[in-house]
Image (cartoon, rainbow, N blue to C red; front, side, top):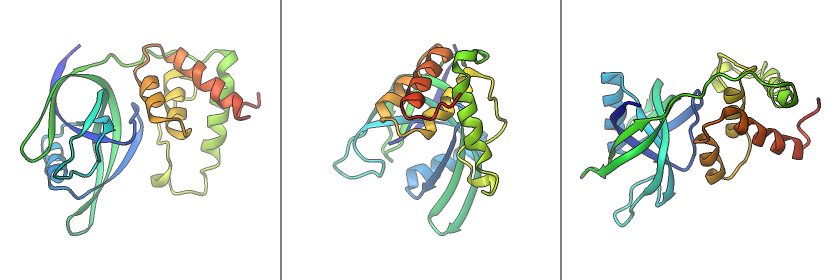
Length: 205
């Protein structure tokens, strides 16, 4: 797979392909990063923060997972000076090959892209996960689309897409979400999520 150079944004969350990520940006290092990404039409990388704080401190030292997801800026709003509201969309997954922190605190990385999930139709024994997600989506009809936690296009017959959406919606520990993110087999990912949904009584079919 291809290797790219990109800035990293360590966060206390896991971004999945096609996921929606709203951010409030106020640190100079990330304001500059977003500006560059918009100007060059390039993504940045979201990685799970495993040590340290999202906001830089003089004594802080971030550590993060060596794998993450590309994020493309979809929309920005600057309603307050020095504060940028950003909505991003998850893209391809990647593995960090090497990384270094610049003097302004921004992490840069050489990353190897991970092959996208292959499209696998949901088998009948896992259809309950898709049906449950469909019910969640139907419950949003009175909510403005811009506030939906899941954005179209909906692929309710695709194992990887449905599994990723449940990884975002369920209150799973971040380390578990990170493991789910990097699973190569989307059907196995959905099987694991189906079991969690069943345990919580969300499978009704």
